[in-house]
Image (cartoon, rainbow, N blue to C red; front, side, top):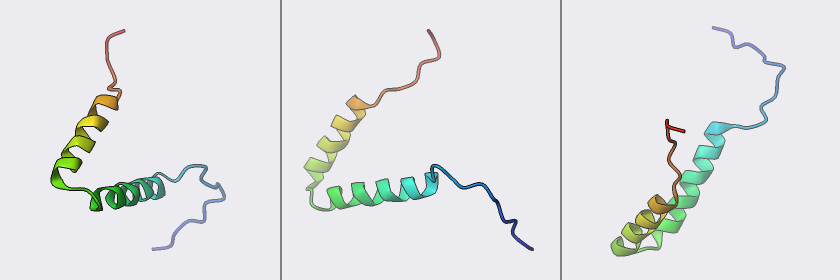
Length: 55
């Protein structure tokens, strides 16, 4: 099977971004204790903006 040469270039590579973020978080968590990791995710959860269907 041949691959098509796409003349369009990507402005944003979602896979690369996800891998970079995963690596960044892994490095941060590797130096933390279990309690620090739990606190980290509890803090991040409170910062997350969740979408709402009602407006």
